[in-house]
Length: 336
Image (cartoon, rainbow, N blue to C red; front, side, top):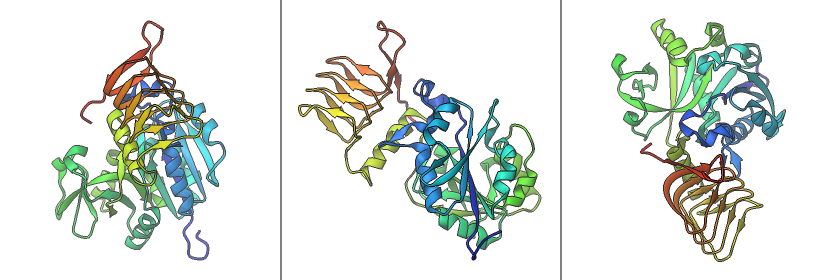
């Protein structure tokens, strides 16, 4: 199926989740469209897929599906797109079933978490997968603490996966790593995918290992963020601007008064910061506004939310309320 020795790649970006842990932020905007310095989270993944030579990608949809489809359209970053609408959430395994024919037109299937932010090393992941001869290959992070992510993935000295749960530690396991949101699959695995909702670990990977199959891994130390909670979303965005974007990112169409202080923050399109306001280590989503004299520190200010004059907010997600009497809904960022 490959041409000139280069493998044909097709991909699925998982984008159907409701974003429950990010509510009420995700009541109005689906998680894959949450911006990171002007680019939707899922947009970063689609651009990396295009750069890796992927010929087409699909997104599965459930929560606020038309917003996602309207934003990305039929082609994004020169990458042709297909969509799979789920009337009921199908999970990480069930999402593959309706797309079996689409994905089978490839030599390697890439599967990416739509709420992860990473400069994905997809070329290296594909090379590792093909050279190993494994049924699947997972991207693992070499530096994060597995205990913060459910115990991590157990691997042997050659990087082959031995277990997915500490309680089921495999023989020969020498290290545990954090799964970093990307898989490379051999198309033949699609024949094992059952119809209906399912989890890819319990429904595919663990039975595969039990049957003698092989799952390889590629370790990376690149910055990776699971943006599934308000705190992780804030930390991921601020880490992004500390790297390629500098220490402040102001989108075209945002208005910052010269007398305002904005430091270490992202101000998205249509957001307004008035004179005398202070915004530090925060993210202002499109259409948000910070009135004169208000002070924000480590705040995610939701789409269209307005902070009144003189208000002080710290370590919260602040979203638009439902009435004038309740203009803001404040949700603590929490520990994770």
